[in-house]
Amino acid sequence: MNRKIFLYVKAFSDLGTFMDLIAINVLMYAATGSSGWLAATMAIRTLGGVLSSLFSGVLADRFDRRKIMIWTDVFRAVIILGLIPFPNPIMILIVCFLIGLTSSFFAVSYSAEIPQIFGEDKVLETNALISRLTSVSLVFGFIGAGVITDFLGYQITLIIDASTYVISALVLLKMKWQTSEPAVNKRGSSGFKEKLASIGRDLKEVYSFILFKPMLLLVNIVFLIGAFAGASHNLGIPLLAENIDSSKQSFYYGLIWGVWGIGSVLATMILPKLKSLRENRLYFACFVSAMLMSAGFIAFLSNHSLWIILPFAFLTGVFDACFTTLHATILQKTDNHIRGRIFGVGMLLKSLGFALGFVAAPLVLEVFSLAKMVWIFHGTLISASIIVLIFSAGRHKKGKKMSQSA
Image 1 (cartoon, rainbow, N blue to C red):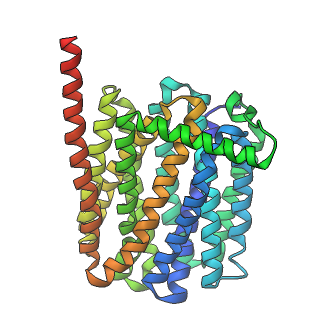
Image 2 (image 1 turned 180 degrees about the vertical axis):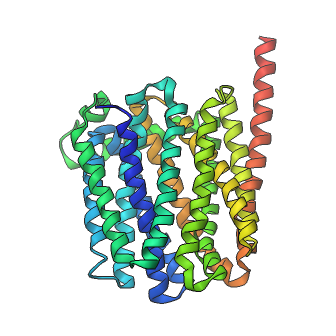
């Protein structure tokens, strides 16, 4: 079977994720009319991701990553369908928590397996294609979910959503590839205490590895702050959509994210052609992309005119895709035996950042306007990226001088 089908499997899973994000958020806001409940929906989803990312990387390095992906897809399909008979706020929170929990397992196993299937030298090109497919899924997922939810109701959206997970699982069942030895055979020790101790050693190894790689540490710090800042626009966009037209909130919610996704598609077509993006330039491009992405979110969330919102949403999508693609490429350049845990740490930081952001964002929104909230959150990311850029540029110059004197 063509190896690229593996990438389309992820696109199907992403399509489901984006559809349920729109449907569930609109469902919660319609049921409660509260931005606090809306933030809680996003925060509880993130909390599930935080808890699972503590050990999803360890499991991805110890067990068959393919089987982890299949079972998480099946489970997500089942829990999404549970919302149809029970569409109340408490059930929505439970489902969001379980989606966050299982999505982390899928994402970490998937990302860690990419270099194993496509080769270490193809990670940038492969990640660009993944981001492109993700962006296409986002466009169809968000716009599709917005239109379907608006005209046919959330139940149809959720059924289509669950079917995308089932299709993803069925394709993975048919696929076969050579799974890496560490991912399958490190099952090791018997005894509960010994297993816990072994997991502890695994986690200690990965944190030591990151601490001894300064640039990898800096990228992860920026990624953490980026996830924190991301809470502001994830909460802000449905509120912005309501301000544009409260009677068509789900449509404008989907439209804004859809235009953002088109920008992401463009970025992923350009990135693989930039042959200069190698070694240290990967890091610098990643930090600059983070800054431009934040500037874009500030620009369009500070406006109410679609003529300003949509062009800036498009540009923001371009730089957001650059940031996430380059971040994944940097992590995938680590050794296979530790790669699952490296992605586990990345997922943990992303989930922690989102969780902290979703706690802070509603509190800030009570005091400041939507535009000022986004300025505060994304201004933090811009400031952090500038500091990291200055530090890493100084470190790079110092390294050059030392190599010349030697």
